[in-house]
Image 1 (cartoon, rainbow, N blue to C red):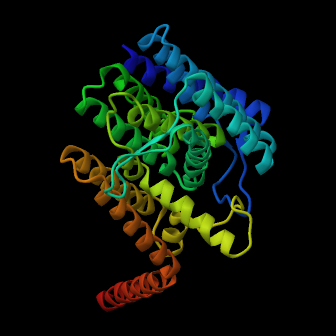
Image 2 (cartoon, rainbow, N blue to C red):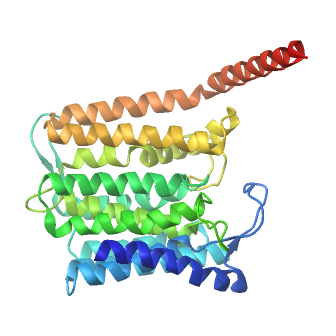
Length: 360
């Protein structure tokens, strides 16, 4: 019932919200950094939050934990809408995100404290200090998914993979009480992706999720990861969570590192994200989406496999760090790849032109 509700309400919300968004100016207009055509309604995030809210009220009637999740999500969606409208300052966004995170930490009493056996010397439990780590994790997750929202379908596809992976882990460990939540989120996002990728015929040609959507996704991810790893009977280990959000996490960390090295603000907008690099290399938007989404599937697949086969946590952690180092190294030398791809593309076009000329 809740699955049908999530999909149907998400679809319906888009059609209902679209004329209002255009009327009040909740649209994304092209500029130097945004190269799309025309004004695109920023209603995706609002639509799949409404769908999630409705489906959760059906699936979890009277559940205090889910109610707090929905309340914190409402605040973050509202914050995102304000940011879409007025382009809020970094300081106001971060302060607001900290206040929203306090609902999970102090309202629900959920925070990251059990880090697992990351170094092979026993379980690391940082106790109440985990509240600080949780605030950092909330801000990190929200902004990590916000940074991936740069080409059509990317943030939604990465979120789809993350929520589906968490759902698989809940299912494998028979966490039936929570399984419905990631399933609802998956179903709520699918209609958005269909509209965002222009797969739905009709009056609504394209929509964006806006900051409301990317922030909602990031908050939902950290709620689910915390619930999945920090309960008395965890559904999966903390190190597995790193692999499930590997691409957004690594991209954000690498970008922040490069900006800080240059003496720039960590939250300064630029065009140095992974998807921008693929675009500069000559790949189309859809090709870049397919490649990055495939990489995210590999990351989460490895994390799930490590959980199923109970690979040592220290091994999973060291492997993650090694992949991150390789990721950063590749980005630092990506100009070589860009130059190679461009040369190969030019050669391929010249050969094609030569064949056409000889055929004439």
